[in-house]
Image 1 (cartoon, rainbow, N blue to C red):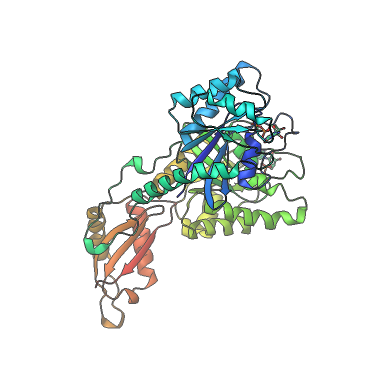
Image 2: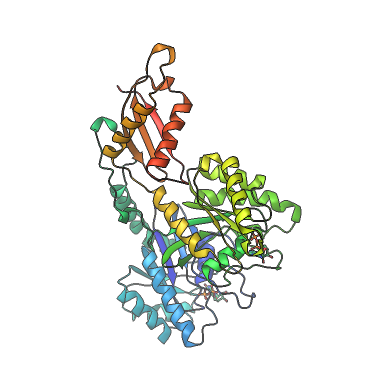
Length: 463
Ligand code: GDP
Ligand code: GDP
């Protein structure tokens, strides 16, 4: 657990340059791509031994008209809401401008925790700017040169105590995951507020699928703008990034595998690379959207990644894309459902949604399916209800008696969420056949209505 730093400030003060320096890779979209707009970018930053998340609000260089001014302001406000600390950059060479004051005002009204940075302060040229910056009333400015890497130690010394503070707070708040059963029934009744997506903890989504399934098209549609570069541009280099957006009012963070894949210039490497990307995306995600091409559904690669998502304990939603091209929709749907049950029994009941990334049809249903999958992934079943259910299950079908010793199921409780995990206290757990455990898993899934999420059931002996 670490903290999140947002780099804010008017265009051209050097936010991207600093972002790139902190993230340590050439992540930014190159400036010579005309017409590229983008949303908040986010990366894992490293400053000496300190690691944190950094958010960049850059990419609005061409802001001239009023609507874009508004957009810049909204973007900054969102970044401030998401961050623990804001690094407010000004340009030490240009001095404080009226636009800087607009940003200072946003930060003040949001009562954000602010560090004032005077960038482009290499050499003597920054002296005046640093003095000028004092007048903002935001405390002592730290002099930086994002381009030349100067001032990084000063920045470190300012951030370090704040980082430690966040660390302590995180440890104090850390949830108990593995409840000690000896203490009896732990309070597992969560409220929605525990996990509902917020700006600070957006719902993390990855869209995976074979090349050409339509991942970029879908992500673009979700983000509502041409924020990803799709189409024929070859050799666009970009590393793993995630993009933030509000999708029908839900704060989301979407992992951009498509952008990553496009860095492969050699076509034959595409398949291989996209599998590796898919696996990374799965680790990142809370909900994995397996995007299938309606024409070529359930390819080996799709199956492998879907299975991996289950193994990694992610919620899964299957989306069948290019539905606009389908003629016999009903028959096709039946066939798809049948294939799904047969090929991915471990994901029984996971939602299957038909969409057209191109036209946008079905995206509202996809949104709802994702939200529901996320809710199920976070579900908490009260212990009393579990045990009533367990009683009925064992009565209907008693556990086996291998070697003449009947296994007794005593008690059951949910020990974790994301995905839901349960422990059954029983005699001779080592003798419990897997078929009975599956009987319980399937029963849980049906009775408590938990389709599409991996369910873990562990047998444990008492004493
Ligand atoms: P942003 O719009 O705030 O993201 O700004 P950019 O990172 O795109 O930088 C704007 C311009 O300022 C670019 O031409 C950078 O090369 C330049 N720049 C960034 N940091 C520094 C610095 O520390 N010193 C100098 N002299 N120029 C810088
Ligand atoms: P990616 O490789 O998975 O990122 O796939 P792209 O998003 O680049 O899409 C591959 C091709 O499929 C492009 O030519 C898209 O225009 C097309 N495509 C994507 N979604 C749809 C859709 O819903 N309907 C149709 N007809 N074509 C689509």
